[in-house]
Image 1 (tube, rainbow, N blue to C red):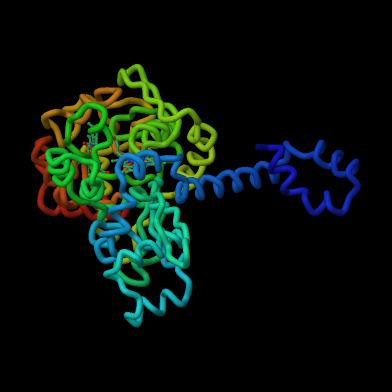
Image 2 (cartoon, rainbow, N blue to C red; image 1 turned 135 degrees about the vertical axis):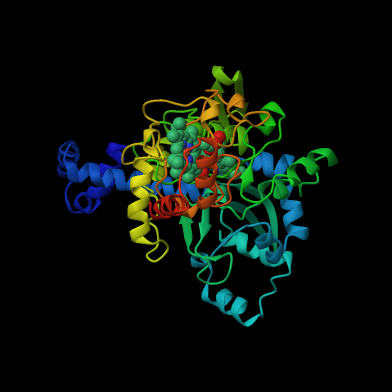
Length: 407
Ligand code: HEC
Ligand code: HEC
């Protein structure tokens, strides 16, 4: 990596200089902090492309097995796609298409328009391969990327159409309903998938057969947190990225974890491993979004901070700048306000425990707790107050909720 970047940075020099001169320049490259900052930026940029557009060869699952390309080409017009929470990247659309959508001349009730959008790489998280034969476009394969679940758009053009917001969980997306469209799935399984609902996915269903989805979490704000997933299964994003890429998306490569008694290899090539460093660097570069001005009452939030750190007892677990003790420990299931649940999500994980959720940007991704059982931050506070017998006054509860909104 270092050498490649080095060559890149030095390319103009190389062109100007003799080969020997360039070799000296390359040999002298590396080590300086400007170089390593440039290298890091290149790695992050590479990771962004992977996050948005790389399927890891998971077409083997989404096309060959689930035949989603047939369903999309025959039955998924853009209105249907938007209704199951798929998002359209407005920046990928040529002006002509934008005008056509705005003036109604582009048919949003025709699956052919979806194919046209896929050809432009404009459907967030869906990667289609379109072949043009005799002037007609044909969708020959489709795969999914990380952005499907962990990106949304800012709706700046229309609801569901706008600029990408990477790392923001797509809580409008109904992954179960989308997979249930596959002609390769039997009726009882379809019924289970259809029951998951928007913003939720069960990343262990195809492993243990239990259908009990969790909310799609953000993939931002993870820098400095050495414990990933609700249950802290890995010490860095790459652990879980490999799991999802191989075991959930169906990418070509391997994942194994003796704690889960799980070992999966798809195909004979590894299209996952060498992408993990860049993919992780990109996720770690995504900060949690700051609370929009005017979205909370600063005076109430300042009082709420005192409740959070004092009588609420919140800071004992949501500690430090990242609002989590995740780097020090995990918690028994009973410490989750969503427990007891049956079966416990923790019991299906590698650790059997829960990580204290980091709270930066928590305003952005209702509903709360791993199962989405608290609809709002006010409800979170009410649940803590009653389950932990905090005895908060109404004022304290409302101040605390305002504080959470400000993080
Ligand atoms: C079908 C939807 C879906 C796709 C596609 C998907 N994820 Fe996730 N992701 C989830 C769900 C659900 C969880 C929560 C699992 C848990 O914590 O137990 C999750 C958890 C995570 C986490 C942990 C966040 C935290 O707070 O620790 C990261 C990081 C992540 N995903 C990144 C990725 C990357 C990178 C990809 C692509 C390789 C990807 N995901 C693909 C649904 C998805
Ligand atoms: C004993 C440790 C502990 C204490 C004390 C604690 N929390 Fe939590 N908190 C957790 C754990 C663990 C989770 C993850 C639970 C889950 O997802 O099921 C969590 C989750 C949350 C979430 C949901 C975040 C999300 O992304 O869905 C919010 C909000 C929250 N806590 C706020 C608070 C507030 C406010 C207090 C004080 C009244 C508090 N917590 C006290 C451990 C704690």
